[in-house]
Length: 115
Image 1 (tube, rainbow, N blue to C red):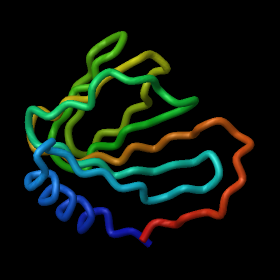
Image 2 (image 1 turned 90 degrees about the horizontal axis):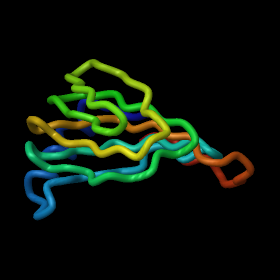
Image 3 (image 1 turned 120 degrees about the horizontal axis):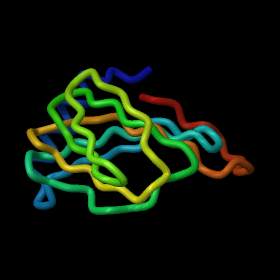
């Protein structure tokens, strides 16, 4: 079972120490389901990228903008579905979010549960 508060704090500290200003970790990998915690220091951006079959972002700490077909600002406690359009994520302040994705179905792998 994952303690998201503890993971958020440790990943934010790791992101502050990282030259790229980020710290990701895959927490859950169960068939097509993936859940990744990502910390970004203020001003850091995940450049424009394609979206998987389905995805959501839940901000645990801080504030981010998601820019794609429209720009959405999300603060701590907010959850949003990501569009299927190319998009980017930028930290407006030191931030941590949980990215949940579903990739193509048909992959068979042993589930990795949150620690």
